[in-house]
Length: 461
Image (cartoon, rainbow, N blue to C red; front, side):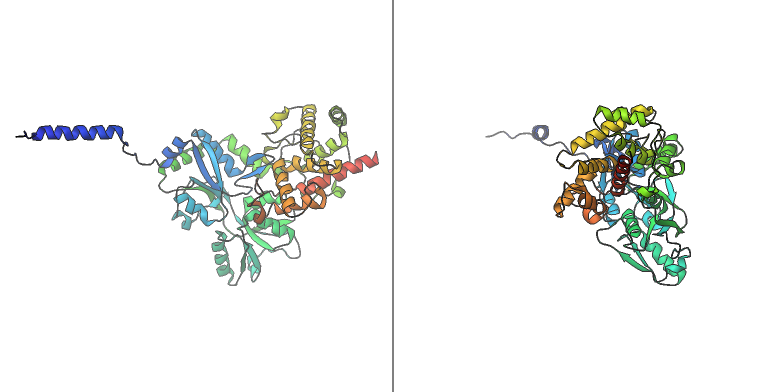
């Protein structure tokens, strides 16, 4: 007869078998990390933003944006890198945030009771008003909002401004013809359309409109449509630790010198500089004169076989020969180098004029040599100027767009220059072959002003 195995021995064998299978099998999975723990483990924090002047954009090969700079500083303070996803459809901000496809909404977002139901907000880091954007025509300008009765007003599709329009209609007791455009154009896109006469009115936050007004000077933004609204970042309600960490950072940062410098960089630089050349300047408005630095221009240009007057014309356009100039996005000096570009040419904010001029000449020469496929020297000079102003990436986008639409990609005049306007249209800047996003700067008039002045100086000598 076979002896039976006792119950204690059976239990021991069962436990041994389970232990052996566990040792060679999968370990129990830990629950997924959430909140700031997940962010710090992966080493990145992802913001959901839009390609606009206040939020995030690329200018002269540098990532910029008031909100981007704040959150980049925050990211570094918690030891992670900042990752950016640009959003086109306004409805996607909350959708992607709450589905864990992003960590923070950064889109110049006012705090509203409706949005508080959808997500949490950080401490306010800015404030602004909703303003009416219209062309600066004394005969038709609107100051009394009741005059919007039956007027067509264009806003972004799915925009938060819809609610304000409905309230305005109720307040004035009349209809406002609310219009939207396809492809979700943002405030900057619509402001440009107002300037160009394509539409008559739009709404924007005053801080956005003020930045745009530095480039499109024929708009008026003085008619207020709201009370002052607090601007804050959006976060998931469940990310309690991230909100606490961000609020703690903002409490200190908003009273720091760094924040004051940041505000000056984006919003206040126009108050202290009268040398910034606006987009609509023409050669007739420019006083034709050379400078006390002519010998420095000549010395630097001679080293590389350049006409010194070309270099001098750029310096005049950039700063009116002011070696202490401060401009948009932190640009500095006579040649208005960006902080990420200047050091590559040994130029810093405190560099003397001769170093600034020499660095500018080296940069111009480098850009010129990068356009070797352009046969005509005149056209190549114009591509060089456009690259100096906009950054080479945006001009390469314009070249690719010209090629796609049947224009000559090696001719600036009436070809590639026409693409500059299209780079501010979401129908184009959000799709291939465009790689560097929206460009709303004055590259077209910049090239015309500098080259025209240069030719006049040559002819008059």
